[in-house]
Length: 146
Image (cartoon, rainbow, N blue to C red; front, side, top):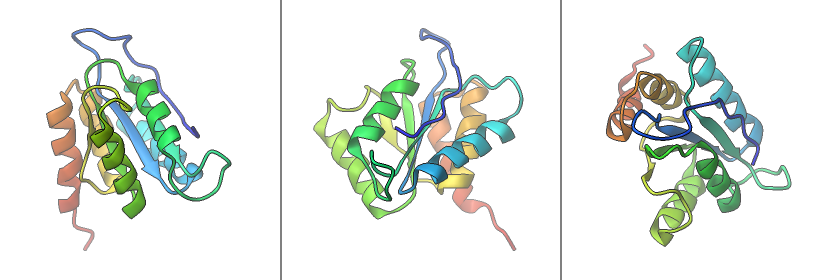
């Protein structure tokens, strides 16, 4: 796992939703995690991990790295998984279909990776539940740039 993880509550009723950022590139996943945590503000305690590339540092996706990242950020409130491209989507869908690879409550979120990551981390840091975190990330598709 090429991951950056911020802290977070150990679990329980007020545990934050975890966020996993899956990219075909480890540096991209880690950089998006750093960006999202930085833009969310000081004192953010949302657990965020990048799961990018292959275990040997190449380009691609790895079920092993995604699973490890999801378990790292799981605090019992669910895990929002955002992805970049096609095979990352397929890998996460396969892991969810298997049923026992990812923590309970892990969800593939349909959102743009960068903007969605920022929205997800901000929402999770405000105490939003998994549904609200997923909705906030998905709303990032509506951000117009012109």
